[in-house]
Image 1 (tube, rainbow, N blue to C red):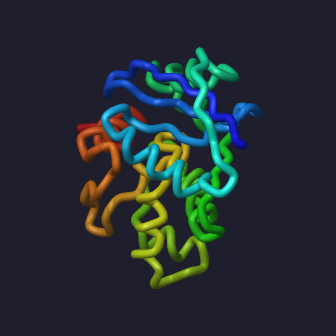
Image 2 (cartoon, one colour):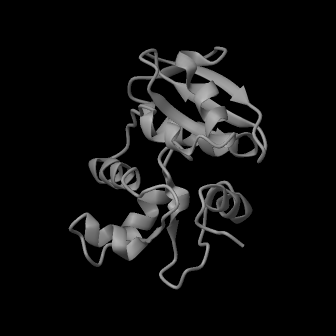
Length: 171
């Protein structure tokens, strides 16, 4: 059985759940009011092996590092380890998301091309939408091909805040 160490931190955008495994690899990062979505994804990803959630304060220093990101140390999220289940295609998309530099964005079609799957923008979008490790796997850096702030599980206002925080939206 997988043990998930969990913490809840305060951010400028509201409370955030931080869940990692015992090797301190992030398994989920989700906004508190979307905890139902987080549990649904955990159940999908780990139902075979099973999991238990155990409260922990700042497991592996991960909570503090996420706080550091919100305090302006933008590069810290690039150093945080993740471990996700999901399909091979989802994991491929999530890994590609981590290559989008802070302060830059990409649209779904560009990400599909980067993965060598031109024409798979919708599949990339679906994988993006099921990302369990918000912020660290920066799904907020993917926008619509016309520059619109398309869906973000945490809400478009949070997506805009994160992009502004990272220097992309300067308005």
